[in-house]
Image 1: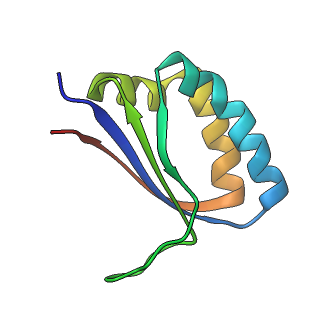
Image 2: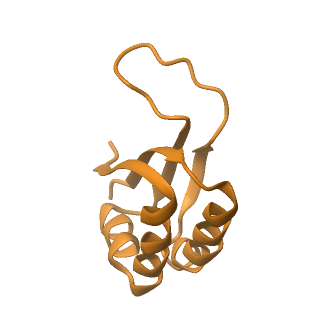
Length: 95
């Protein structure tokens, strides 16, 4: 079974409140087996418009990745994130 991945590009507008998003999202990530492969760090933007923060999260399957996003726990965190950050997020199948 192919793994599922969240790929996010984020500009955080309120760093203090973003910490609330992280702590609120943590139970969903734990429940669905999230493995953070990249979070922040330096980036060399070669093409297109980038954002300040880039995140890659691996899940055991595409279904786990989708279920995490749609979970009640993550939806609570999402409300916070939308207030404090601008985000591009995709969920994709691994190979």
